[in-house]
Image (cartoon, rainbow, N blue to C red; front, side, top):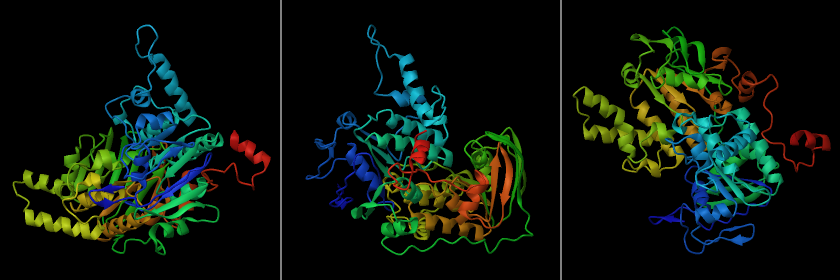
Length: 518
């Protein structure tokens, strides 16, 4: 597979067996998403490529309609949803059934079909809601539901390209129970993910891509752990990620204070974070922790609450994003594709956009030479690849897009840095870079609040973690911030369970298999 003389995939051959979950992993830019797009007809492969499904060879380039007829369904990394349309319209587009007499869409039938697939996923999402108003987890659920409704028992292939990245733990566990039911009928699943835990826990075999080539094909996951899998991806021994407290945190410094916060799922929350500290917010889906960054940054107007910075108190009820930025509060949001970056603009334009807007408002033009020097510095600091300020952001891998998004707001030198799932859907190398950059921001005296559902991310980043329950802070962890302790605080006192108990596991007795099928 070649783009502008740049070979993205080289002699890639992959076999997904009937009735298996086959993992596909690799660093950002290794070619995983490109392969998924070739299989579904979005990209045209080079001559000599062959694609077959259930023994039938598809004509190339693959036609999306033919792929779907052969049982190939996909949930792309970008989800492929229409924000201005309703959940029902997104779910049933191209699948509508017309009435026999007037040839009009039978919306009663469409609603019944949509409700059935959401019931299967154990989710209740309003069918008439505009997709653009949904949370990222709800959007991911809609995209997954759209693919699952096309699955025909016993045939075909479903491809999930980073589509689980926004799912919280309970939704993730339920999702893999559904997948287990699907593969037991003989349908195949290709799971592309950066969450190595998903591969170890849920996949039967795994293929590893590195620089467009397969370095490990169809290896059983039995006996593999996350460290070994990461080393296969990187081609080097993994440097262990180490969490460390910000050395410059001043316990006597005046903290930034959030008081009486109400809005979204937040019922009444009060927080403190000191300069130089990284505070983590977490909880189950719907607990309110992930609303906090948007309420504090003016993106979502809260019903009540105040934020006290070094310059004084801000009333949050009337706060706009512009007001927040002017006060030194910036947000790195979840969903970089539709909320954080201008995908059709360059790395340089994205990185300096907030500063040029501020300079223009102050009638102090931002010198082009200064602009170029600053962008080059951030590209170097965050190892953005390719190191080209003129590169269009939409052409970069997900990990490099996330680095640009982080640079965009770190360059503003904020007093309070808010992040929501900052390492979501990035490879282990990019994650190490992002974690180091956030810790460096704290070490330079910034206060940082990270909202996230990834216990590994929180363990690496945070000095403290507070757990939300029913819109309020219910628990605080200050010591032993291990992933296991964070999960235990969020969900149960039992620790986390496996995502999927493989039905083919010979160690399972008949009673366990029956319980799994319930």
